[in-house]
Amino acid sequence: MPKQIPCLWFDGQAEQAAQHYTAIFPNSGIDRITRYGPDTPGEEGAVMTVEFRLDGLPYVGLNGGPQFTFSEAISFQIMCADQDEVDYYWSRLAEGGEHGPCGWLKDRFGVSWQVVPTRLNELIADPDTARAQRAFQAMLGMKKIDIAEVERAADAVPA
Image (cartoon, one colour):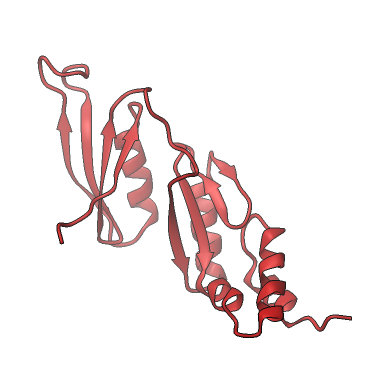
């Protein structure tokens, strides 16, 4: 199967976004920047694309203009091992952005991210459906996911 590479459409901020993201994720970097030339849709010399890696995975940022914007219909999940990772990615990606419900946030460039502790997925997939439901209900009331609080809710004994 051919390699799939997400291409993110920006309005002149592809290089800044790539710099921001590569400063947050380990094993990341900017690999190549291409610029608009003469007789192209963009201003000659301006950044057209930025090829970058986030934790080894390739992405492309395209400065395509204001015609298209990001929406929550597409998001990137960050599967976090513990609360420290949740806190780190949440705080860094949310800088200048918006906090959303259930572990979702929108960064300063409008890209949506889901900062998800792997423990949350374990709890909401618990074979004890009542326990899983309590964990799920706790998550619904949160912005940034608090693993300890979801565990407390899952383990609560109904009255």
